[in-house]
Image (cartoon, rainbow, N blue to C red; front, side, top):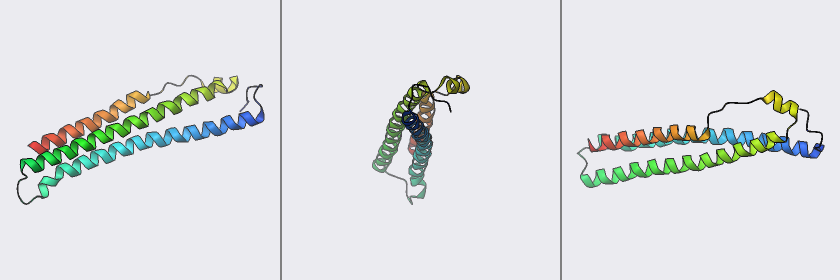
Length: 142
């Protein structure tokens, strides 16, 4: 990689190190979003399956408590997904700042990269959670 001539070797090494850490952070946060979504949906499925193991029909109080637990799982999942989203946005902005300091040869080789926006992915994952929560609540009151 050819660095911009005004960069010292130390600065180039620092940028490379920051680039590597940032790309690893991005991969980790994106992976965490999917993992969290999967675990959130699994928790909803487990909670909604509880009544099928009860020997008698659940009372309205029990259903209310179970419904509150379902809603809490949904809200917490969406909250943490949103927090991860902000971390992804921050890392993407950092990458853009790093790219702007790279050599023209690097920037030319990189080209313009179309990408799925972080917000688009967040919305897809939130829709999964909301649909799972809605289905779980419907099954609970059914």
